[in-house]
Amino acid sequence: MGEKIGIRKRVVALFTERQAWVRQIAIAGLAGATAWEMGDLLIKKGGVVAAIVCTLSIRISLHKSLREGFGQIVGTAIGASVALAAVNVFNFGFISVGVTIVMCAVVARALHLGEVASVNVPVTALIVIGPGLSESTAIHRLGSTLIGAAIAIFFSYFSHAKTPVGRSIEQIAAVSTKAADLLAMMSEGVASGYTQKDAGNWLAKARLLIEEIPAIRAQSVEARGHARWFPTAKADEAEEVYIQGIALEHTVVQIRTIARTLFDSAVSGGIADSTQKAIAVALSAASYAISSKFEESGPSADDSHQSATTDAREASAALAESLIGDSKDADQEQIVRGLSMVANIDRIADSLDQNSPALRDVVTPDEPAAAKVLRISARGQLRRFGAAISKRVRRIFRK
Image (cartoon, rainbow, N blue to C red; front, side, top):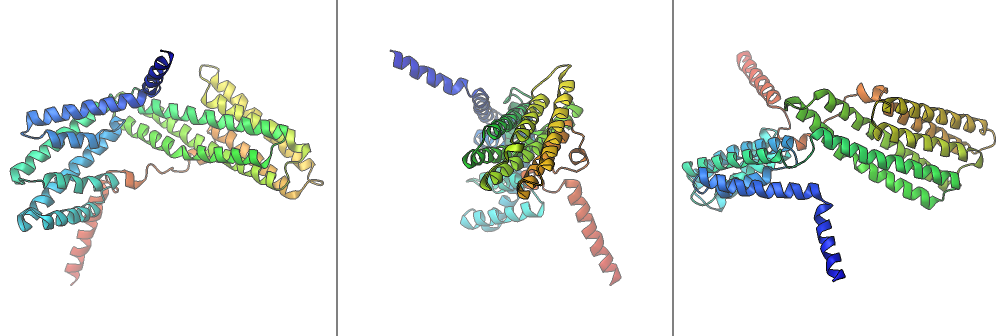
């Protein structure tokens, strides 16, 4: 009896501990079923295409589903046109299928479609080119695609309990906690005398933290994009969260550098006893500064944060004095490594205070072009097209 209860609890825990995932797949299933029903209701035998497009388009956020839906619509329009032309010339068969796929790839390349839409073009073309293709059938399937994309966009609004800004804050808080814990771990290790194995573990953890940065950047980019057009979103709040994400990225990079420095020091014989305490104190102060910045909230949070970053700077200055005082007797390479940690901690404090020009004065790229529906904006493509035509016209008149 006890074993059955234990198994039941574990099964229930599989779902209760993954509430966000359960919510997303439930919404996706409901959206697909609705698309099937609405597709059949509005267009004869349009349920299959609508359900396929809805499943391909729905994402965990409204912003992403809008882009995916637009990509599906663009892909279907191009795919339907190419498929109709290929079937009319070669009739239905393996030649028309091959020509359709090749031509879709060429057109997607010519229009500078992103990776998402470029995949959608041949996929939707093959959906359209199915048995019984005619102009009316192609129009019906295009209509089914529009229905599926629209339903995916509608249901994606409910697929996540938090806004894009809320998800960004959640990710930033989680990674900042890991970063502060790692610095605290390094501080305790340095104070007690760490080994090369300990330093290797710290470096591995720091590398894993770096791998979480792209997800934070993508989510903060989505928050900014969402705030530009969604009426209830606050653009200034999204911008502030975006800057916090960049500040955390800079902070995590410095932590990885510190971990690498400690590892190199361990390989070279370890840290001198005279500077061991100063390094531990500086790392502990940096850890508390990160916790103060990203975890605390309320009226006194800003004052507490400023005090914490000031303490971190003072601890790094004390470390620098200790290293310079030992410069005559200690190994020069160890002195250089110690001073590099001083610079790392100062950069962490500057990033947390957000007063570094590196955060606001340097343009940070948004998401990669491959992730966009259009690698080059429609306006940019029209400008290029107009310039090309103008250039050719001038050449003709010159002749």
